[in-house]
Length: 116
Image (spheres, rainbow, N blue to C red):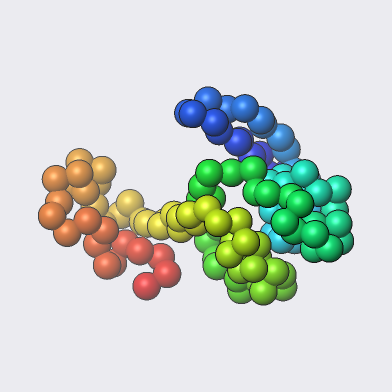
């Protein structure tokens, strides 16, 4: 079970839970929750009719969505969305505390980034 929050101006405007049974992949989840299309087929027929309802997309997945079974579709969706897609970096806290990171000139330690 995944929980998703959609924010507008810093306020949660929609909260929903997604079971493992639906949607079937990353792409269908993007279409379902970020457009008004009823399904992937409807969206793909006329993507211009269904603008993306987001100002920014933050990718929190620990893998690249483009490497999933729906990877090409996800990449195309991101390109069509015309909104920035930011990739969150997951780091290990064993190398540097929050305080050390805040005062560091280096930023993320190369040893603490999982996908080095």
